[in-house]
Amino acid sequence: MHSKIIFSTLLSGLLIAISGIGQTTKPIDRLGVEGPVNFDEVPFNLVWTSHPTAKYYKQEYLANGDKLENFHKLIMLEVIIGRLNLNDVVETKVAELRKMNIPNPVVNKETFIKNRELMLDFILSQKVADGKSMLIVERNVYRYKMVIDENAKEGVLLLALSDRYYGKEINVFFLQILK
Picture 1 (cartoon, helix red, strand yellow):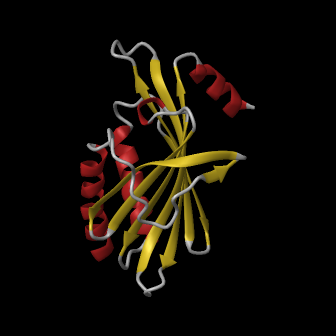
Picture 2: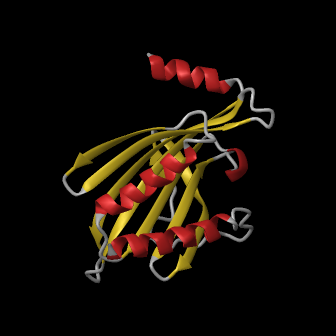
C-alpha cells in the first residue's frame, strides 16, 4: 500500500512535468544517460527532462527531425526512488489505461513478466474533433525494472518506447499489426 501512495504522488508530479513540454532550455541529464541513445540503429537525442519531486526523474529522447508535439518515435526513461512493489506500479498504469477506455476508441494492453521486470504493451488513440476518424494512434512498450543505485537506494526504472502514427499512417500501422 505504501508503494501505491508513493507512486500516486509521483504520478501527480508527472502531470506537473507534462505541462512543461515546451522546454526551451537545454535539458539537464539527471540519470547519466545524456545520449544519444541508439535504438534500431537510429540515434535518439535528449530533448526534455523533468525532476518534479525529489524521488522522480524523467527524460525523453527523439530522433533528429522529430519534435515533441508531433514525434514518430520517442524513448523515455523514468526513475522512481523508493521501496516500491513493481506490480503496484504497473497496476497503477493499467488502471489509468482502463479509465481511458471509455472515450478512447482503441486501448489495448498486454503484460509480460520476467524475473524482476514487467513489460506493458499498449495502444492508445485520439479521435479528431468530429469523432468520425482517428487523429493519432500510439503504440507504447513500457519495460519496468527494479533497480538499486550506487548508494543502495531502491527504485523502479521505466524504459519506454512510443511509436506514433498520424492521419493516413494509421491504416499502415493497423495493417502491420495484422501481419
